[in-house]
Length: 246
Image 1 (cartoon, rainbow, N blue to C red):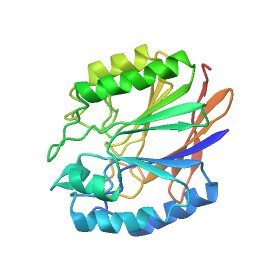
Image 2: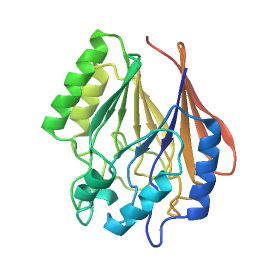
Image 3: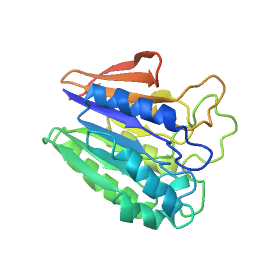
Image 4: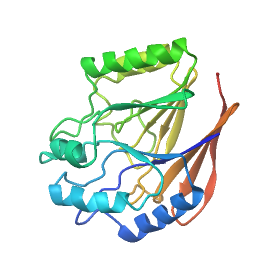
């Protein structure tokens, strides 16, 4: 069994970041002892170097290994360069115990809100996913921008510009789980056999309607994928349960 904590949209900065909520979330997630934490972008609010420095102090509070991809806010003000210096590679592959593979994609562009994967990164992803299909390995794709519009988020302005190509790759390669952030609204879609999950914001005060700060927990065992929505300091409930293909 593997337990993954999925956090997103911290927005560490002057006005958007709620430190009290974040510290409470850190305590909750550490108590769950996940195998890993995946952060799907917008670590900072404006991509400033000082924001990154502060964010790294906060992220160091997590006890589990953490893997992050950048968001559109992280790539502002040369933040795309700072991400590589302080956080790590903007796209990456992680394989755990030869059982499953996680692919992290950089959907950001410097100083733009729109999301874009691009042909070179898509071809690289397809190569990694080919191996997953051949070896019948559980696969996860993590990125910041949503590939399908999210309900209750107003006018759609910045879904991936190449969403159609990415959706084709994901569905034809039988990806099990796609996780993202960006809209600060939790949601689950299922397309063919692929589960597409959006996380809310773990610590930003920019929330829509009655949404509260939250994070997702994925429990993956030999038979099922269980997705829990955890509202920080509040209710935790089963968001979805799905049969595994392999």
